[in-house]
Structures are given as structure tokens and as C-alpha cells.
Length: 343
Image (cartoon, rainbow, N blue to C red; front, top):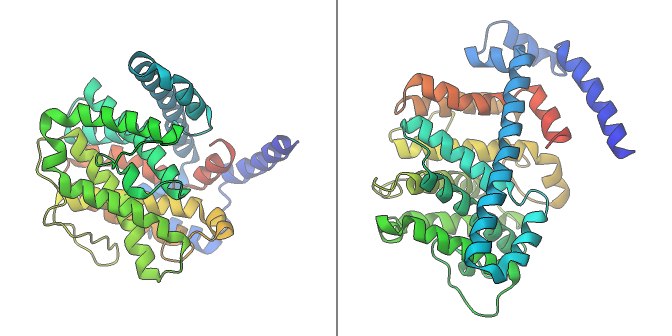
């Protein structure tokens, strides 16, 4: 019955959507008066484009989840058969495989920007880092373990661990094996530290914090994962976190390095996530940039322009445009429908 009611509501929204009715008439009028950048015309004025783009993202995510399940299943069954029942229980929980699937999609975007092939090794790096990160986040958020016990690429392993924690160690160790030829843990130890510290600080979002503290935490929990994955995919570079200070500032910011541009893309994705989760976060008392009024549907357009411009300083325009199309589609009204109904 609930599904029928939701489907009915979705049909009403679709009718409004395809007739281009906008609940914020003033904002809609300003967009169509010419005070917008070209991509916003596509995002808001062409529902067919948004529908096709969002469906492609959704389909790719589901395909990625299927591939992630198979790759991780083969690894566990062939190398750690005693852990196979644990893996089956973990992977059967809804959306557990979404993280490795999304990480692989992001890795593919990085390869496209860099004009590099998404090799089997790079895909495995993305899959295992995503799976390990998902388990680490779950265990840390639930406070079942001390954060240092499930640090990515730097875990303080101990005996007598939970089933899910033992699975984290398997995936984390495999990730370490994949990047060991590049002396990754030594060469990128500062970036690994920054990433893990940011994830640990994410637990504080349930506590009383100032708005600036929330901004700092959210920027870092969004930005450092993007920098780390990019480094994992292309380990011949220097540690991008050295001599780097996060400065996400769409109001008056300049992007000086590729590291900044990639960090800002991660911070932007974090903001998009906050906007979609605002209602749930308010119910659970979880602080975010949306609940604090820092980001919203009114500000996200400007933020996308800022991040888009930063990437164009270091990558060809056509590659940035194609990469950013996925994020631009997510600010369309149709994206809200897909998020609430399909995903």
C-alpha cells in the first residue's frame, strides 16, 4: 500500500515536472530571464536531458553494485573461505555495495579527466577502498570500535574483533597489497592521516558545534576522500596534501592547484548529499551544511559553477563538461523525484 501511495505521488510530480511548473516562481522567472549560466538552462529547462542523465547514473550504479558483489565475492571465497558467510551477510544488507560502486564510478571520472585507462588494477583499487571505507564508516559511526582500529590503510588491528571488523581487515589488506608496489603507505602517509582524521571528526556532527566547525568537518570529510582516491588511482604523483590548505570558497575563492580543484569537487558532492538528507538529518539531530543553512538549493548552483571553473584550469573543457553533467543533473527538480522514489 505504501508503495502505491508513493507511486501516485510520483505521478503527480511527474505531471508538474513535464509541464515545467516550478514551486519557486520567482526563482524560475529569474532563470528564464537570462540570469543563468548555460548549463542551468539544460538542468532546469530540459527535463528529457535530466531524465536520461539521471537514469544513466542510476543504471550505472546498479551495474556497479553487481560487479562489486562479484569481485568481492570471488576474492573472499578464493582466499578467505572461512569469512564467506560473513561476506554474504554483509553484502545482503541494502546499499552496502553502493559505496564500492560509487567509488568505482568516481575512479572512472578521474581516469576520464586524466585521459587514462580504467585498468583492472585501478578498478580493483576503487572497489576495495570503497568497500573498506563503507565498513569503517559504519563501525565508527555506531561507536562499536575505536576509530584507529579501522583506519583505512593504517588500521591498528587487534584480536577478538566482530565479524564486520574482520571483513574490513580483509578488504583493507587487499587494498594495501594493490598499492604496495608504489610504496604508497609511506609516500602518502600525510594524506592517509588527513583522510582518517577527517573521517574520525565526522562523528562529532552529532555533538554541539559552531557553524564554522561544521563547515570545516564537512569540507574535509568530502574533500580528502576525493584526494585519496585520486592518489590511489595515480600513485606516481607526489602527496597532494603536502603544502595544501583546504579553501572551499564559492563566494570569493580562487583555485590555485589541481589538488584544490579535486578537493573542492569532493566538498561539493558532500554539499549535494547534505541537501538531499536535510530532512532526515534534522530528525536525527545530525548537523550538516544544509541543517546549518550554509548550503541549499539556492546556493548549490553557484557552487557548481565555482567547482566547474576550478577543474577547467587543469583539465580540458570538454572533459570537465562531461564529468560535471552528472552533478548538474542532480540539481534538477527531477533529481529529487529520483532520489525519493527510485534510490
